Image 1: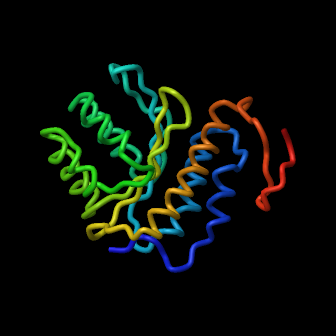
Image 2: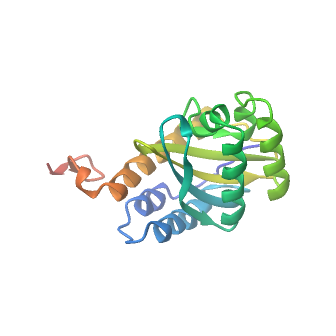
Image 3: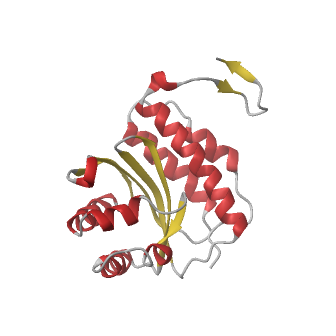
Length: 193
């Protein structure tokens, strides 16, 4: 199944990433609202940001937003109960963009069942996530469910990865506002150093 709409207002999504909303939960909900328009048959879009310690001994949600936010927190709890290999597979995939079908290949015993149970609870066949790491000890995923297995085209993975890079940068600036090194206009012109 293709996941992206034929026509997407990419600029609107990027602008929502850098929007200066004060509270991170409101920012995450705004991001979900703008990104919903990029998915063809996406269901239950959400955002989960977690904080974790070395070796994932302590993993906790920092920001959860979306229609099924409570379920996302439960999914996180079940993943952490499976231990470090499951957390690593879920929040450190090989690329910025992944699907549940791709994650299943990397999950430890019990992980595949946990993913299947989560999809069943949401009533979806697959899920897509854009996973970013804006700061040490922090990971976040913008996710959406799908009614059929997702097979990403090269073009879709590239576009979603570009959104992921903006998401990571925007979230880094939100978490650490003093981290700005330079500001570029959309044209590429340097406006602040």
